[in-house]
Length: 133
Image: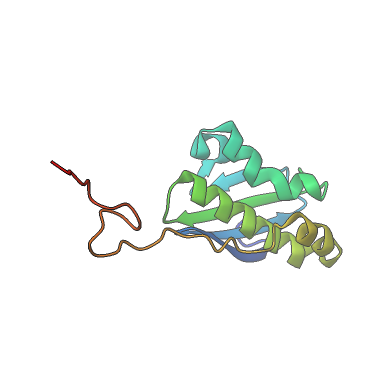
């Protein structure tokens, strides 16, 4: 996988995580995240499956080498950001893949983020413990 080779770039986001994703056509299917292989990086099979969902839906597993840089959040948010970024890059690489990715919900940015803490409360909604006596 050469960095100077022709590639497709997209950004994916989920919670507080941001993924910068490069797709290199004609690759072996290697997925590199922050310089490490995908299984070594996420360390959970369920999260690995989440990242690979757009490729499996579009039958493009092994057709692209993927290089990603992920910042912020935890591993679950980062996996979701990777999935979003891969989906957007796939839609750029092959516009005919856009409808199935859209139907699968992979091109939509998940807007759910942590709710802010409110004053007079312990967290966003949880109140302080009340003792009647």
